[in-house]
Length: 424
Image (tube, rainbow, N blue to C red; front, top):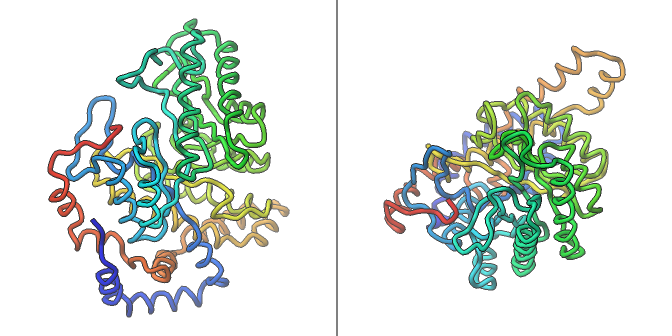
């Protein structure tokens, strides 16, 4: 379903007087507010095709209702999100969960909803029904060359789908690793993986990027063949200039200083993009900003500073995507919350007084440095983010209109009470 333009306009009209009052106030308080608004308008966050259904845990899944049953319905759902927040203008596909049967039809449908195709994601972390060889003991690291060839062929197939859809990047996340000491030879596992990645890399078009995603643990708990940012950076450096590290906020050991990792990867020109989520204990895949909002701000602070130092375009210089699993929430509501949290945090990071912060750092003025950062973090920029949506034709309060229009109820009527999203 879609929400008609006149309903969004009516929703905005009812809130416009109060919004204008708030915006006039913050516009007086924040210098260069217009420049920040333009950056917010340009900033887009890709939505993964697998986030439109109810996720789960290794203990079980509680399917939601009205879930998208195919790729077309997933695109429609992301189109709905983009209509409301004007910041969800891209979709990231997972193959083989979402193989387009007719790429021209899918491209046309996405274009109708104002969506582009972000990174393509391969899948060698589970066996498919028609798969000849198993990935139980790894894919690109596997001791069996035939298994490695199968994984390589799959990634090249994913690239071909991406070319047809207009994507320009491939994300490779490997669950390869071991659960027990002695299970594998670390050095050989790394070399096998690198060799496979090199074959995949050679199949990339000249304008494409490869993102090597890392994860500290799970599903393997003793070792992971791409276990941290250092290993990912090592692969990316050996592969070439089109290979980059991808940071998933949940793929670190507890208390990792992610903002420092981001800073150094940017410095080396090897930060490719982000998968946004939040966590309390591990790879919890919770709503962005729901657990550690200050950490998210500190990460964005480094992103803005580092990208500005390199003259990078904030909107296009890196790949931005949400990667979360929704087990107890309406997935669309969760995504609206996550996008809002990202936009708010990005706006706060743009408020940091870089000149004063540099002066404080150069003078070892620890107190002033903290005050400068926390002043930006404590500034309520929600009205600024809402103004950016308003100027693009989005809703001032996306969640409010989503519920007022009873979107989930309408989706249940259209799709049914018991539907299962592909890939989940």
